[in-house]
Image 1 (cartoon, rainbow, N blue to C red):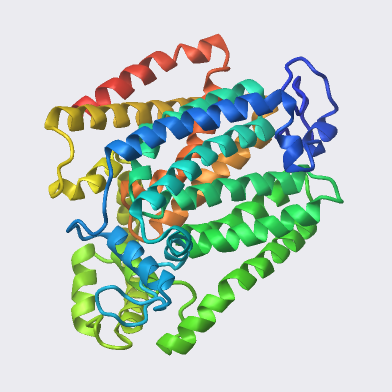
Image 2 (tube, helix red, strand yellow; image 1 turned 45 degrees about the horizontal axis):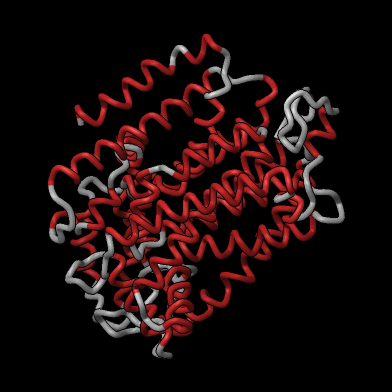
Amino acid sequence: MSNPRSSRRSGASGEPGRSVQPRKAWRAGISTLSGLLGSEHAGWVIAIFVGSLLVRAVWAGFAAVDPNDGRFDDSVFYHNVAVFLSDGAGYTHPFTLLPTAQWPPGYPFFLAGIYFVFGPTVAGARLVNVVLGAATVALVYILALRLFDKRTAVVAAILMAVFPGQIFFVSLLWSEVVFTFAFVLGLLLIVMVLQGGDRQRPWWLLGSGLIFGAAALIRGQGLVLPLIALIAWGVLGQRWARALRWTGVTAALMAVVILPWAIRNYVVLDSPVLITTSFGSNFYWGHNGEGSKAVEDLALEYGPLTRPGGEAAIGNAGLQKGLRFLVTHPLDEIRLTGEKIRDLYRDDYVGLDLIEGYGTKRIMDEDLRLSLRHLANGFYFLVLGAAVLTVVYWRREDRAALFFLVLVVGLYTLGSVAFFATPRFHFPAMPVFCLLAARAAFLPRRALIVLVPVVLGAILIPELA
């Protein structure tokens, strides 16, 4: 992803030393997915996909988790709502047995499709997680190829393939793995809109809008994708009028995907709920002085959930109270924003905690658990450190690509801390950090010297945590 005004010594195929014109290098690119997986790269993509598949399959077999084993978390909702849907019982809350929109519908409907075909088997859902996790690694390779070159693509994909925090989640029936696949695919489509020719661009725009809409229905953070697209298209060599037009097309397609669900919510819940009734309460969680306790009090005041209309009432009240706090407590908002960013990137072993139900469902001994925690954090901080190193020692020919990746991280972070923050929320951003970290391997020698303290820090930080 070279800047139109810069020069580089790498072809679109990733062959070092091949001279191309700057504008042609930016706009070149392959116009079809078969072109993306040409003979030069097919072997690498297949090998990386299969390796990622095996690693994730082994973990999923070892850390098999059943949402109905007595735990109480989001996976219980996702699984049981999906069972209701596959049985034709509608989108019904598994605890209140009322129509609901308390969680975004994308992942339960995705699971329901699996259950409809294979039956309500948790093993089948884990298998799909394994496949999509490996497919995300392949997407990282292709995205890195579009932004940089083949050698960076190989390193980035290997980092994602063995990323402990990413592997842990394939055992869980949470939305992280599916959303991350959709998120990375959305980023690739944003790039392809720029790199594709005029004949192919309408298809890339069509895919972008549909994927953006699907991602938003899986996780609210998917709503940042059109904003990422607008800024990337407007800054990286296009006229803003054209970027706005393209974004308008994708927004209209997103509406086509989301609108049926919003209409359903208005009819069934008698309230204008775009995606989820939790929007307001989650917003209030991040914009008050008491954290989750304030949300619990909110539910007591405007609930209970067992009352028809309780969900919407809690969400509406939360949004109003959160906005009031944001306006009337500006200094507290600054402090809370800093704390939320800290909490968002604090550590990377939350998948282990969720697998074991935060200590209620032990599936491994203490030594193994601690070792995996340190491994996860060490690898995570190493990737973060290398990513920062790439940005600090940026190279002129990487300017456009780095702008895009930093833009993604920045907007995704802001979109997450607009509510409350937990380390789980940074999961979809890790492929982007892997892309940045991979580029650090090819920095000048003087910059690579800095990797020594980064490696030491990655080793020591988990030990001190």
